[in-house]
Image (cartoon, rainbow, N blue to C red; front, side, top):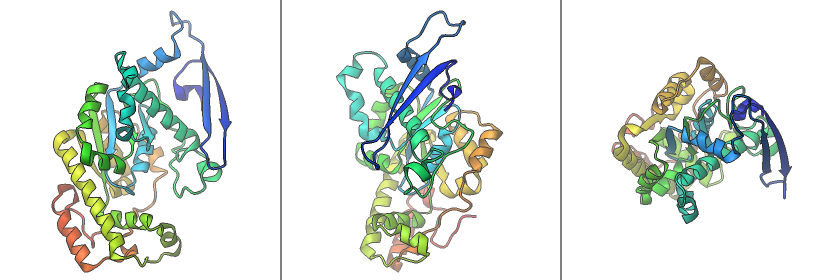
Length: 341
């Protein structure tokens, strides 16, 4: 990690790594000592520097959607942008009670600063030791099938300023919002910056199939052996019900927030990355360079994942899912027999 990655003129960084067990996350302690440049009139505290940085944030971003829908990939690509910080699976809505504390409410903006700092550090940790790290697959987490490091860009860091900050946790966020959608108003009022949402959609048949493979613990076997699992109709039924519960919650967010929500087809990210990233950058009001497009495109899979044939569907389930899809404008283009091109 270079000094420019954390946007200071001179710095000394000491990283101390500790591990209580092999499976534990590394405990990261970063001590940064600043030396003011001649242009600065006085030394500014570490806290004040971050408060100024977070006061410059223009947009707060949340993902909504479904499990197994390439949100991790899209979040990693956005985190690589020089003006965007996206944490991986922090879970803002689920942890919001933490930012309601009386201690944080005592001083203006402390709730915002605390949340932004937590998201910022979560992004940094993932870039150093998580799925976005250069060495995570071989050293820290060999169980990861996919890693999302974008070499040469800004994951975990920023350049000059942060314009967008947010969290990549879609399925659990939508699940929480299905019963507590009013929390979004409180978040917006507390942060005093516009909310934006990214809603990523796969073909429901693939999405439901992958959810079932994950729930039954058969995903790895199917991938390695290239076979179809002998699941029960009940296994699939649970995934169907969960999927459309999330679809209803996401539709409610779309109705309430209109143009603040952008729908992204998952396969478009893989097949047309430049066009998809440009849509996302436009939605977030940030500029994207050709260098950013090129380096992000270099890490993408060659083809979208298609898993609908890896599970056993009854004809009744196919018909019912097709009918339920018609209730949502963002699902009507999909079908069991249609493939991404």
